Amino acid sequence: MAHPNAIVSPRARRSVGRIRAVVLVVLAGTLGAGTARAADIHHVDAAGARTLLETEAETIILDVRTPGEFGATHIDRPDTMNIDIDAVDFRERVAQLDPKATYLVHCAAGIPGGRSERAAVVLEELGFAEVHHLDGGINAWKAAGYGIEGTAARAGDR
Picture (spheres, one colour):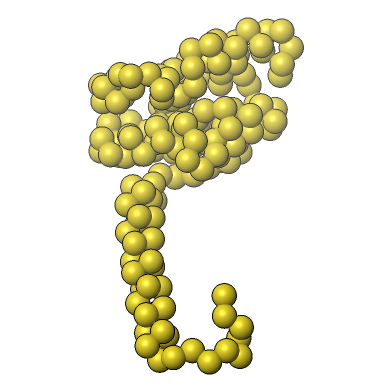
């Protein structure tokens, strides 16, 4: 990097300016392509998810963790379903769900770019109308003291 007081030719300045412009255009296109659909996903914390489930009783919980994780602990509601995001037929299986229903999608940690956010993006791509993402995942749900079920829950992991 040149010293701030260094003399830079006008030609070099123009070249650097063009390179910056190209980099910005490429970054904008890359970031926009990956987040355009994600902007339609409603992000909620554990308290917001609980409120959603209380006010919209027909909300379907879509747990996208592995079957083993789901069996160990999951949100204690009869409408909770498990479809593993890493299953080869994930997209086909969620395509069979009702796209007009309201979904709360979660995984273990609910981090940006993680399993549940990737799953929520797939639902958006398939035209699902109402998709909510549980930020912090089931870990945040458990930390808030909300109900869980499964083998770990029965063993005292509440």
